[in-house]
Length: 116
Image (cartoon, rainbow, N blue to C red):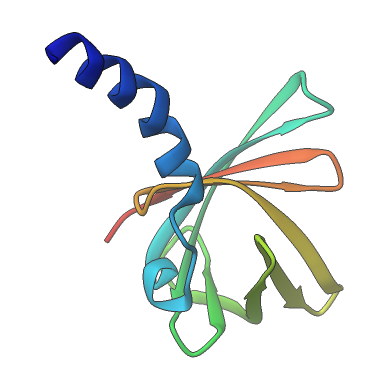
């Protein structure tokens, strides 16, 4: 019985982390956009602070903590559509577990860590 439990735990736990619903309430809070991987090989540090509000707004912060800009977002079909002055950017959700977020935008893998 214990072996079966551990087998099922290791098989289904990654799927549960991936399939956790991303909702505005689950996404709400302060996040750090830690890094991105371009074309599957080149890693670039970002360390950008952002706050997702449950009303569908995003606040982007400068390094000194002051507000830099605002954007909006919507969530549908496993995609966060982030919209700023450059237009709509579909971020395909790869993984979300409430504390970390991994999305892909046009081949760039973007990684976020929840701060609060």
